[in-house]
Length: 131
Figure (cartoon, rainbow, N blue to C red):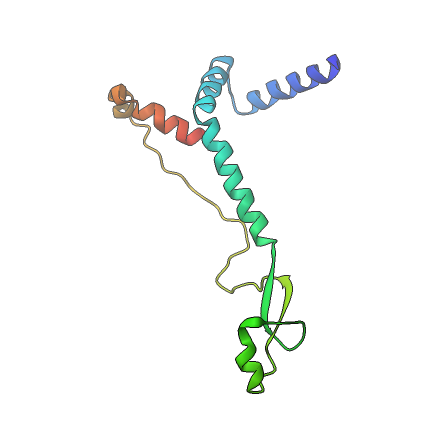
């Protein structure tokens, strides 16, 4: 158990050294992270719900076989053949992009942000970037 803790500690120090993060920087980062921890959790839940909904099975309507679609009874009476429904994966829309996206963020880190920080604008900006 102790060796595992040492491994994690060494890995953490190595990762911080890779990005040139000092112990003081780590404490500031932890402080900023603590301020937005609830929002990060909420954002994760929302994104996981979107992922789950993408994989959810839905009723595929207008099929020639399967269960009878109750909403198409009149169509059945006039001889329509596509009045059945089946459970299956949602058909992909051509407008949906499936490849990963690259985001760029532009933030103001000018001296005025620190000078006018009486309204905590720089602190909010840092917390947003951490999120």
